[in-house]
Image (cartoon, rainbow, N blue to C red; front, side):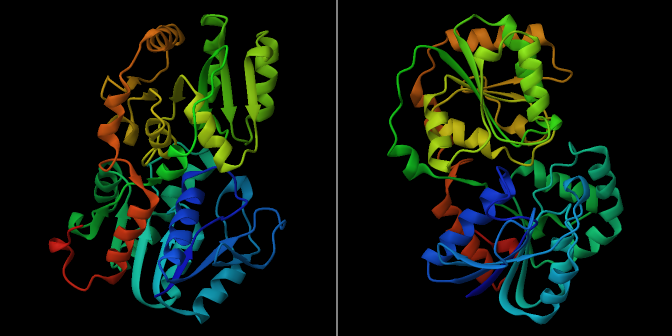
Length: 368
């Protein structure tokens, strides 16, 4: 099949669920013999206009993206109107490229909204409302909508009055094979790990604030970059804990997977997530997690491997929960239940998407 993936940014766009998702499914589809093209925008005009990466043809377009929103590209709009593919798979409801993709000639039209319902800046949240009349029309034109969680499916049905039978849930993937080839390293400290783009909605600032309340051998490791990086560095300095906070703004994926494996605890305090890919990666590495009891993150909470905390975050309660988990010896066998159910290998995600791309019957009878 000739497949077009349409997304706001790709390769070089930083850490993020949509970036990881499009990269992994595109390369997986190429390995399975398909011809895959990605249309994306260029964050800072730092990347080639045309490029082939691991067999994936990438075309990048100039964009207007104030406050990392809109991702408006007239060049992409014109190009989409001219091309023809067997399958068009568009990503990220809150950006214009997805809505522009309806113009492309295709046999099958698939949408992944990656929609958590909020948690963006005030400016970007305003776009969600702005997009709603247009967005409903775009979503209704899709042959299939792929949600990454039951939460996202229910949210889409509620927000846009969509037929639930038109929406299939396929979780995100994890590089399970890569994790199996890595070995946990012994270290002389306890590690709390956080991986995300460093926006205020990810809740990483709570971890800086709670660290003085934890025992002295606990180190906070933060992987990612974003607008809060400088603030977090200054806050750690003001609290006198700079020696206990380690920032890794840019790491190769293999090194990030090693961080998961070496961590004693992973924490994500977002209020809005459509799935929680970083939580899946941590659990696949056998690392207990703390997440907020909200959005799709609440689907992970089992009080055995994943523990919940509610908003507003109380630092005393958070410190108590962290200390309790660090003192626990959690049976590693408990983590196995996630594999193959809520956590899939990327190769399995690709197989399921291939079936979605090829289906001809009513979705009411669609089975994996």
